Amino acid sequence: MPELPEVETVVRFIKPLLVGKVISGVVPANNYQRVFSGLEETQFNHRVQDAYIRDVLRRGKYLLLQLDRGYIGIHLRMTGRLLVKLSPEDKERHLTAVFYFTDGSKLYFKDYRKFGRIYFYPSLDELNQKLGPEPLGDDFTMTWLQQGLAASHRQIKPLLLDQKFIAGLGNIYVDEALWQARIHPEQTADSIPAGKSTRLHQVIRTILATAIENSGTTFINFRFGEDSSGRFASKLQVFGRTDEPCPRCGNAIIKIKVGQRGTHLCPACQKP
DNA sequence: GGGATTGTTTAAAC
DNA sequence: CGTTTAAACAATCC
Image 1 (tube, rainbow, N blue to C red):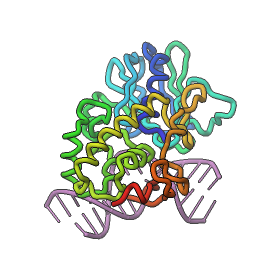
Image 2: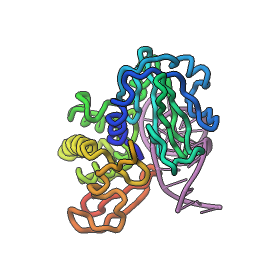
Image 3: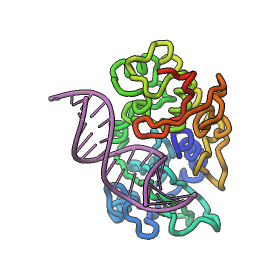
Image 4: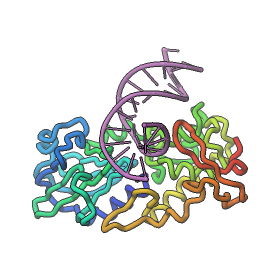
């Protein structure tokens, strides 16, 4: 499941391959028109045709192609992948779109569940309106987090997953961060003591940075480039380790539901 | 066949 | 009434 570190990994991989290219067209594979969010194929292509790719960026879990006019946003959701070359096992029916460039090269958007979407943004205003601060950016300060938590009666896990509150965190890294900070995922945000919110701020940054250094987590379906895998999966402490001993205290990790999401925690270390 | 999976949107509940 | 929570949706695999 591509979260911030996985999207960042993809950005770093494809940036040198895409910057400088000119788009000749973006075609939905198998006529899957829904891949364009809010726009029709012809309208979308009208906006991006002959556009020059100046840069490749990330905002939250959105991958952005910065054009000489606006941005193309790509959200991989659960199973989306961007490929420069198709392998023999890449089935045609799992493709959702193909980007064509004037130099003859292509970029394939493969997504067997087809939740992934392609957007066009005239500017970043729309995205900035619906996304909170970047957890690795300057706006994500200790004070900001403490004030944000104090202002919310929600459970801490659903709050951290809310992209409007903070951008880029998903199920894996929230479970890991709450374990590191010894916070129960169901604890109400405004009841978290200062010591733990300080720690939470710290571990969110270190976990994400470490995951990026390791090219992300390949847990179920994240891969990038020529089928390279992320190396962070082996560093996960609680996610996907149900019934295994907690690395800190030895108690068995349990899996519960919090806000309808599968949630891993150590019941001994993370007391409500 | 039911459940798991993401995030947006919409509806309901507190 | 504003805030918080649940449900629906997209599609596929196991």
